Image (cartoon, helix red, strand yellow):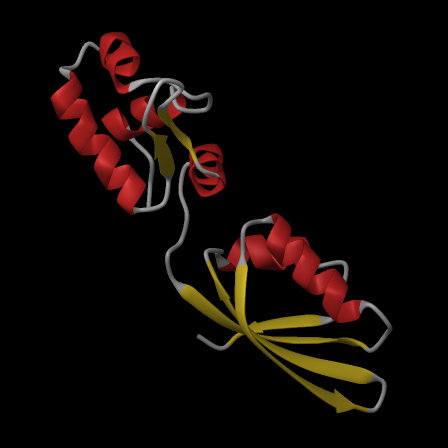
Length: 145
């Protein structure tokens, strides 16, 4: 998923809460047309809306992440990671994956001597990001699918 065009312009204005009326004025759009776009972004979990006196719309954490990255992979990766076993290894790996926005949906560990083989199923990251973030922690990373 890429953030481009009007969607990007809208999201750039939503880093701080703003009303639809104010945002429509900034974007030179009719508020009803903008509201349709905001509802789509809300349904995708990228913005949150609040009604009432102090209401408005703003990006969620996921929306901020997507805007910052400009593009995310909506696919799922299954990895095989081989590393020297040590206390805190899995916590280190999962923390690093979490910091780049990855969502681990499954983990299986196997031990072979002083090595551990970890199978991970991860959403919302791409192969290059994973390899880059784990390169100094593990011996080998293989993409299974």
